[in-house]
Image 1 (tube, rainbow, N blue to C red):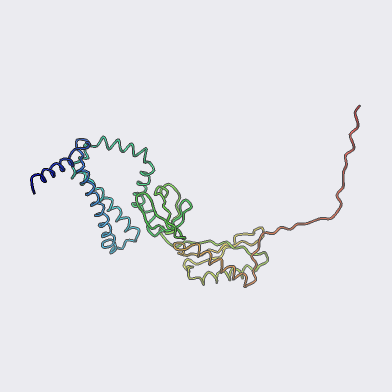
Image 2: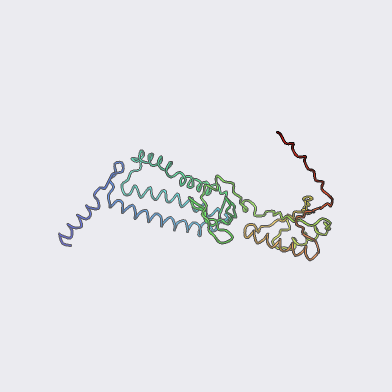
Length: 300
């Protein structure tokens, strides 16, 4: 390498090393920024690889369920990212202890300007730690019903029965009422209302409904199904068929639909009427007397 080439390289290195600004007492140059970008990319790739290895090679051999394995892998990944970026900042010469005042000012700015993002971030940590929801759970929140497929620090992905992915902010799962059909025990009881006409054989109806639900493979025998007589309605005898099932985790709408199809077919084949609201109108004949008021006298 000749002297001119060496001189150009030295000048180029000096240019990259020229301080652009200072963070505390640490000078920040183009070279230090390039180092931090490279190290940051390495830390992110290493975290993805490490999380995948922990999830597939280590946690897969444990007795933990899928949601718990995902939560543990996520938390370990976030810890790795925090340590990795801290070491990367120290490697490029940025002493975080000298940025305490700046960090406090940034924290106040984040608190006001990025309040929703910080709220969702903290909510994501709470979800991963307390696990009110987990991967594979079927949930309902703010009118969104579906299966949880991904939990990140800012949001959760819920896939509906129509295969539509809905991005739900994590704060909704902390501050709003959430229906989790999978929490604790996947078995749930579904109450199906049915009305039959007055004068129908209620014992025959009860026997037919019990035979119908017990023949369904989705209906559990333990706890046993039952038919409840709810009351006397305006136009019908009101019943409720209570069945226990785990189908709410997969396709609740189809499960209800198949039950209703079977009920309608069974009642029609056995001559049991499903009534609709009726009103009787009575018309009475007669004469309506006509009353006339006397004319008002003329005033002079």
